[in-house]
Length: 405
View 1 (cartoon, one colour):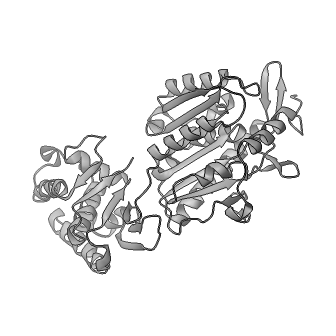
View 2 (cartoon, one colour):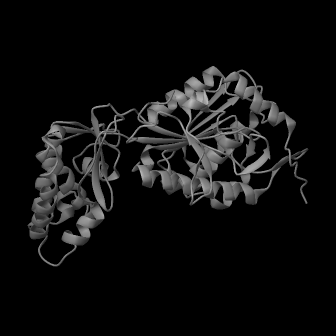
View 3 (tube, helix red, strand yellow):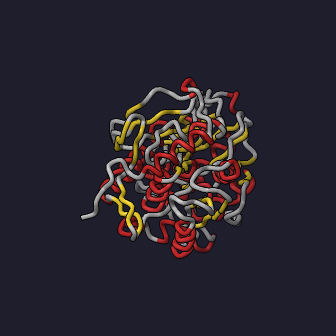
């Protein structure tokens, strides 16, 4: 039976206080009051002012013995179009002192209460999915990051549920060996991004943990960066700067006058940039379009015409002020259209001309030519995505869509 230190190691409490002194916390007026997520029972604060229509989500996790306010300074420097959520650990160890799981430090290394770590992991996945649903934020525009034990949980979430996040950052943390039974497959991890940042002189979690994490991510095929710094167990200015640079690379800010195009299964919507003054449903989603039109009996050409008519009916209601807009999107369906247009995976722009060329080829398929002959997927979901983006660009007079990762 592994002895558990209810107060944990005083070294970690000292580290939490050192972090607070290194990063002067924002006034509580810059953080919301505590919010409880009914699904996961986790409590959290939101960095204010929060965007009315966020285009991205960042979840920040504190270390053991700390609380959700510890990373407020990092939260304050995030792009204004990002909803920043600072979650509180599930376990209480003292006044304003919380943790995600208990741990004992032995000669053989840290020994954790694995069930508590797993419960926190699953609760965080639930919280993220709830926030994405409520705020209509794509998983491709979501990052989870944390310090020390918070970094540990960030890695646990990313590596077990990569469909829920774009990436994770571990700041002075580690990856739990106990995570292995719930690791996602290499195929599911292929699109994940990670940052491992650690102090070379860390005497709480030695730098060897960062090196192990680097080796493990290499084996898993996870794209990642390893950054090592002078100093001990904390977030240095250099580490914070590198984190923000990494975050901006993978969650690039959306221009205030840009529209974010979300091609979802049940609806297609356009959302303004971080000003958040427009959120508009513009048509049926991909699955809905397939179900209601493309999968019905009959010739594909006629079904495509019916689908286009349904899309046009809703696009006719879009305000003129949104015509000629700058549009960005991270929807996978657009990547499929881009590939069909001959663009590689690094392409950042999908032009209306390229979409129209693909549509002409799809029309030939609808007339009886094999999809393989035209180099197109034999997939009704692909057809739905193509029709949606083609009609959107045509009716709103949009010359190109910026593709984000």
